[in-house]
Length: 233
Ligand SMILES: [Zn+2]
Image 1 (cartoon, rainbow, N blue to C red):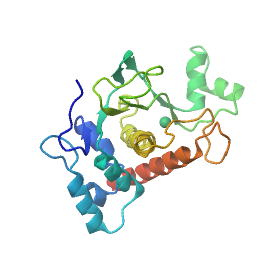
Image 2 (spheres, helix red, strand yellow):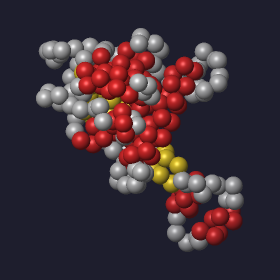
Image 3 (cartoon, rainbow, N blue to C red):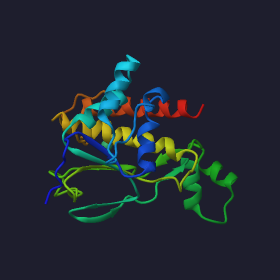
């Protein structure tokens, strides 16, 4: 039986870690207007008050308002695993390392870093994230792909990558939340095409590319990362 939403208008973070990836993607001032009601849902009236008091708000804040005002329940979960109609899936361990570190790891023992660097001079030493960072599950679609959500809610699941790099992980998770929630989920609610195409480009007008979504995602991720830094000052 489907859970009946009494108020219609809910975004529900599952715990403190989940609330954290939402608020750190907003400016500190905006974040001051995010609070939970006694049912554990984000208080939409208070968010709206915040918008009136602040005058102008960023795209992440206005996207959050739109999600909260939608009648669907959106769960926000921080976890490496998630459950769908097709079972329990594991997003696996992400990595935060450079191309050089990766090749050095693969080469195994018996060679020095200097030898590897000489053999692969073009490999970057700049660290980058790679892996599976998040997923959005819908109750009404995805049955033949990753599966549908099992509780009738939309579920934004962000991979807990804190074990990979404790310092960098919270920023990556705030950015991933913005990607899933303010990109895929928001476009779903707006009844727009909300999945990536086979091409992911900010420029290509090919029918294989969902350009509007890619631009939205990039903007929301960038804003979340900038805002995250503001919280560290
Ligand atoms: Zn995506």
